[in-house]
Image (tube, rainbow, N blue to C red):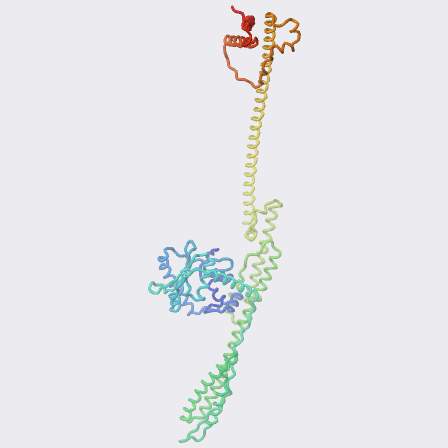
Length: 576
């Protein structure tokens, strides 16, 4: 719901009601109002012409407002919440709430105390089901516009003694019917054309009866009573009692009036007979006949005048409204946005105007003023659009000014400041965004640089480690080769000394390798190292070589091998 900051009863409120469809009009729109027909509402919404409020009606309204003010604190105490008068719209549907809770959950609607409505409320058995359509259509629209859960419908004179209420909850079927009704009403309103109200069918009464003449001179000397009686009875017999058409009803009503008159004439004849004032009676009858004829024609002409004036007012206003709408449409075709709504109050302009000339002049003046106001808006919009286009000057700032319909109707000075402020704020925000992006990129580059440096450092460490490993392996391989060569030489020497083989058998190294097995290959994987004193290293080296010599000599299966091995060992490590 859109809330409008207007006070109920003010001109601003009346203007808002005129441009929307109100909750109080809902029952008339649905054809359920006690006070206004749907056609009357169409004419009123199309032309803005409302019936003048009579002093009696105003007095009733004043009593209703006073009663509402008295009932409000009573209901607030009952529901435990404060109630606030609110005017709100949902689309073009308007509701003026007597009261609404702060959370828009409860609607308060008050009616002045009357016994018939009290009976409806007291007969209620199921959430407002006892209320007539004249009331519940208004409540349905109030609940729809506000989105409230329920309405408390109150009838009172402002006192606790005369106060009754019921709760009303919206019915989905009724809401759908209400919205469909307004949709059709909009279509009918767009096609509405004033229709001149013609006077009702005028009944043709029976032929005028001849004047009854009675003269008495102690006895009845002259009388046409028998002829009068026969004529009257014949006409009575001829009366049509099968009433079907408007003309039948009109004739019947005219005949009723004629008989009323005839009855009075009979009574007058009685008095005439008694008074014997025939000449005076004829005079009076003639005067009465002329008076009645004049009165009848006067009333007929008066109705024609009123009906024609109303029709002329409607025609003039509808024509002016159409002209104004066309003018606005043509203006809007040439503008980037539509001009704001302009209130052309034609109905208000003709209030109090009596002549057709004054009516047409008032409407023409109002139309001209409204067109001038629209034209002024056009000029402002065009100038402001030029200002905006020039200031932007091709820069991609259109997204900063998506609310064109609001800003293009500002005074040009205000718009210039607004444009400057928005662009400045955007450029500051954009500069901050770019700086933040640059900082992010810098930090990202620094992070990548650190990671690359760490990666290169790791590669260098791995390279150095690999070189160290390869160097160590080369040294170990060289050492192993040296040891093997020493072992081979030692064993060869031992074999020679022990005469194990002849000189000729030791010619080639390949043959020697058959006698002395090759050592196991050294694994390239780096081994853990320890630091020990040189003396311990030499002792370990001696022990290892001693063992190797024993194994080489085949100490486990050669009886003379041990001595041979020890001899080879001591040749390498002499006993001091």
